[in-house]
Image (cartoon, rainbow, N blue to C red; front, side, top):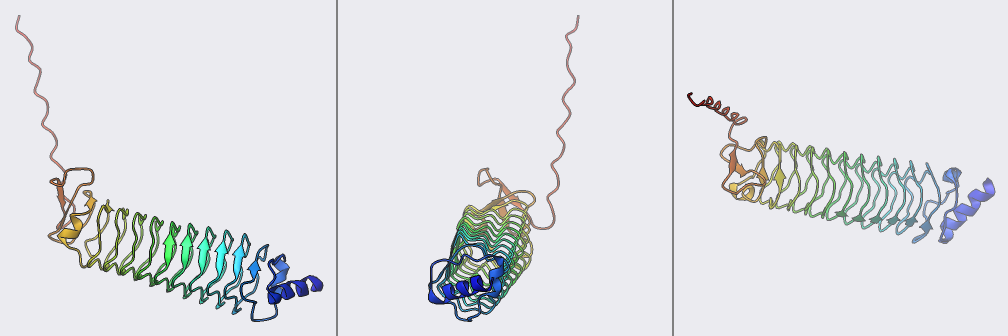
Length: 292
């Protein structure tokens, strides 16, 4: 076991191409500075790499589930098809990292620095990204379902075709972000900032936006079924004219929205409460029988 540990440590320090250890390898990494551009593969479940310098490291098909990477320096790291499920990356520095098809389900990124990250089809389901800095990040096709984005910073980010269903993004900053063609159904976005954000063709069904700021946001093709915008700020009629909703859509006083799938002349006005139900149809006239 000691021999294997020494071999793994040497491989990391000399910049070899493979880390082939098992879970026991977590105690074998003794040097704090891991060689730049080292390629890490294989299995290292529950590895303790807290505070390690791993700038430019390449994780290809690796399994680092439940790894401890608290405060690790992973700037410019590459995560290709690797598994970091339930890993702890809180306060880690991942600026400029690439994430392609990587699994971060249930991972902890709280307080992490992820600005400029380039991600494609990465899985962040149920991940904790509270207070994380994702400024200018590219999260195309990312799965963030039920993730925590409380007070996260996503200004100038690109999130085309991403899944943000049931996220908790209270107080998050999406200013100038591009969230086009994305799924925001059932999300909590109270007090979130959407100033000058683009929400083109996104689905906000059933979301909560109390205190959210939409000044200058683009609502082109946005579907607002059952969305509560009654406490939102910065909304104008011009913005809502580009979107559509239903009778359950709630808007600030004086604003209205057209019904989805209907002519723009068919509008739903929500000023206070829900509209009254339509009157029941008149009963049919009694049949007229011929006289004999």
